[in-house]
Image (cartoon, rainbow, N blue to C red; front, side):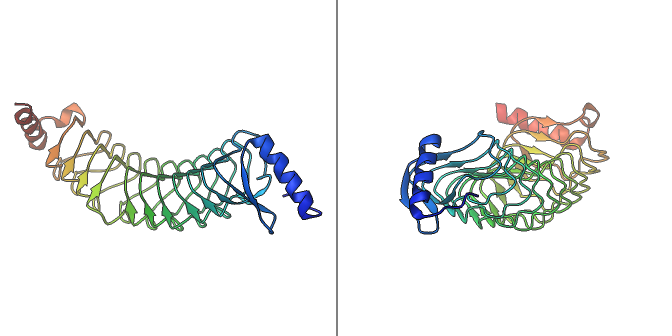
Length: 276
């Protein structure tokens, strides 16, 4: 990061940068950082480092689609979204301590979530990285959480509360132990394409779609009791539908050979009655 001969030199550099990237500086700080009133958008600028140290940004902070290997220089406080996806980050060191909206750090090479804020007031997307653990994860995510397409073998360290979708597909999970201890997922729940042998620890209610396709399930024991839309469980070596959900409001996506089983016939009957 650039060094400065004097505060005057710093202010001149910062001002020119604000003109170039169209952000409004509200304060020049003694530690050679700036506060910004509104958004900062330095996305897609072919940056290899953050060009100046930010302190407070009251709006959104976008630095996605660059070539950043570090978040050094990022704000301590972001009032809106913080988007740093599609870079070359390997850690979340120097991430903001407070984020008022979504935090999206997907499509990097991140191996650790240490450095995350404890609370994300929106979605947290860390998919398509190199994570083997969720250690360092936020404790609370008020909207959706997506840790898919990593190398996770466990959900230990998962947020204690997730307010929206929960996505953990395309990992190496053998169990759902570690998911939040909450009865309801207020969105989609997708754990497809892992190595799950049981659905134990599933929440009881999934308000939208539940997808457990492409695992190693031999029964549906542990399934949610209620699914608000589709239930997808294709491509499993099922020998029984025991434990199937009691209510499926949408389609039940399963191979034809299972449609003679009593649990599937019960689903069709309930669906027929509901349509009357």
